[in-house]
Length: 463
Image 1 (tube, rainbow, N blue to C red):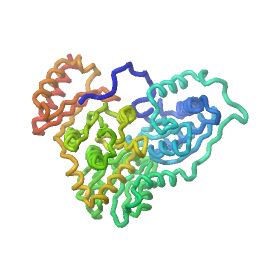
Image 2: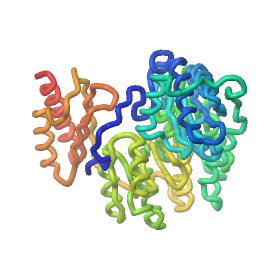
Image 3: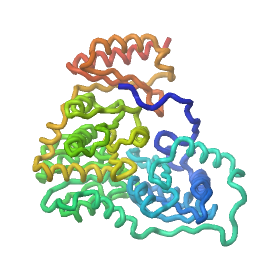
Image 4: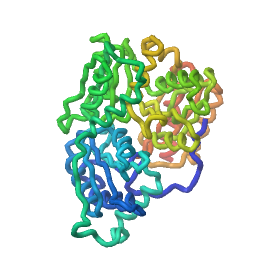
């Protein structure tokens, strides 16, 4: 299926990418100087047309550079007369949720998600808890480039102030617990959670414990330089080992800002985002709560998800890669379940962005409701179609339609696979790297074809 995003002239942005601004901390653009300018611009946009002082929440993960950027952002907001509420280390979805519940005008998260600690990033949420649209990010960039657009500087009593939101953690834990059915309890259920030494190192274990679970917590000793280091969603082997060792019912591996999760069943088998969507969609179809009987996912989701939904009476709507595009399609079409294979799961009935812990709680509730272990639920929900991924770094990016050998070979392979498989060739969003994905029967044949496609791309770009 083709992406649903309509072809239109892209909004030109130099700083913001598909998930905010990101880079090496203390190098452009992730400098305190730019963070200060960004704070001013966000506060200016958030407060425009309002009769009250703009209120901006600021949260971060556990990176060492978070202190530097947090203070700079707060200074920028204060410089335009805004009020800053500092939340400290908190998951990205927590800031989105708190922005709405606190009736703030904007929320800012300082995090580079699953990247190593040397990197950092900044993403902005609007008052509705959703990431800003491209047009709003472009306007913020214009304000950063030309501070004259911000008008006269605030002085005297008009200068803003910053304060710590002391109960931010408790507020978010309460929210998570409210998404778990009140008639169910995790009493006696053994759960392993890996917080990747990141933003959820306190709230993830606490939430599970308060719901009654017997929790084994790993990746909960952040040092400022160990976030995502051989732990969390990118390295789920630690969770797998602990689950098997302790006889746990589930393992939860979060990434650095906890907006996504990779699960592990009681046998130590990985359960990715596609399986989570399949399990939840099956239950929601049965209940009649899956809006328009549709799940939204990206072109990277396994064909097995699409086939499983079809058998259950639902359908899959695909978007381009990126959780923001999933959310945009969900909002535009009025859908309430979507996500990515990588573990970004979006339950719009509860939250405005991907939330790893929220997704894990939905699966725990499903296990309790059905009385079935996670391994059985995942196996019944969908069967993965063999999938092969290859990538190659090339000298330069060229439009795919201009890469003749690649296009011709891709078409031939697509015809050979027919309805049993898919061919997806795309450029990475951040580097001159071509990504190739093949799905269908006979993994050995898929792997050979993938290598042929990579070689065709090399020849096209070297000509």
